[in-house]
Length: 269
Image (tube, rainbow, N blue to C red; front, side, top):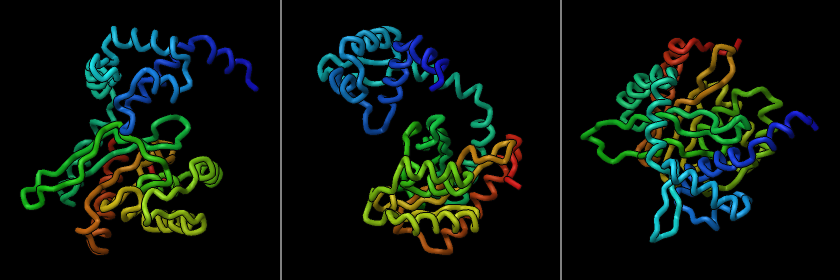
């Protein structure tokens, strides 16, 4: 065990707990939670948890509803998020390509990256929803929403382009779960689907994570030729055929290439 790491973790436990709480409240399924729920689900002492939440509320990082007794993310995070976006150049550079994909395909386009250094979940970091009067009903997404790597086209795309050792470790950690009746839960079949992703250059999922929704994803590599992000489009599965899927896949590959040129990324050799 690395003693330096142990020391580093023990120096600021309250700060680490505050970060964990904010990340917990940012999840799509846990946006509103009581003190007891937060304390129990995050294994933080209740009195300590209450003190941390009190400070976060004071600085408007968290909001507290007196009637429901629930905590949510606070308004000052909007300010921080806006300022962070100004400094994260790659999101600015990717935005026009997301818009182009959305206009070309007529469906919602998204950009995802790992939600943490463990790389076991991907998170929406940018999106574009089409302004299409001919098809007014679209899939909508929330920035910050996270997904397990084995649950949709995003994850398959990301896993397919990792080195074999890391890929196998993550699949073992996350495991194959039946999110819907169309989820791939057989390991051999799943690994074959990853080979197909590498062959085509994009990943496809039909209702494998969310009933009624399809996803198509392409990889974005950094300056070292390592996968760093995924660009994808989402729509309703009832509206697609093989020709349209191939069309979307090629558009995503074009956008991916454009983004890599803009941010200085490159495809692996």
